Picture 1 (tube, rainbow, N blue to C red):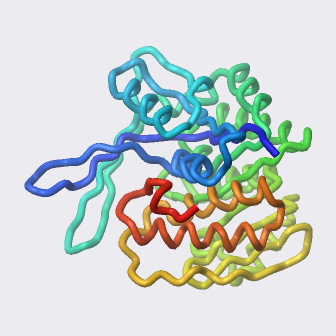
Picture 2: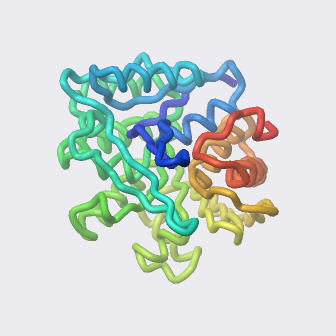
Length: 303
């Protein structure tokens, strides 16, 4: 099988500590991370594209070159005059990470502002992936535009995958967050929630409660990630449990869920066996959390 995988969202400039008061620059973002691992795990006959908006500055040029070097297509990306990417900085204190963000005027917040370009991007894809963070950074009108196009893609038979990736600080309030994330799920054929987030922010008392809530929204296939406690899949009403891969030393949990999503989708697209895809993705995620950084090179993944 071959096709086009499209990931929609925000990539940011990342600044991390490099020692001696210096900072290291990189690029990362939840949907970009998933595209990275999908590209690493899919055969060359599949194309992987990223859909976002960037500015016309030198940093945007560098970001696009980074995508292209990784084999991620940039032909659908909007460029907005006078804008620039968002930025975040990782701080370390006694081994604990904290984050500071500068994204209020980021170009990516306008990724769905041109409905025609968004529709063209989605119509050109066979698989569409987006997240709760994608929806959170958009205006109400633009989020509605993206959701409308996702529903249209789902109705046409495309695989539309959604990770709620719940980040309350990005939303004006819980009511808006709950409503919009629920609409994101309605627009998807496959949802990949993390149980810790669902329990904390939706009040789910069990994994079954998470599954039933998403099934009530019309989601056919659900993959609930629960960290070291494994993965529960419900595909068309059939439930399966897959154990997590044992990790000897956890170095960095950044991108654990994103890498699982990318690897799961890549495996499932080639061989539609959900439990096998979850086992494969669990192995990839285990390798990722054993390394530093969000984006681990393909050669270190064992794929």
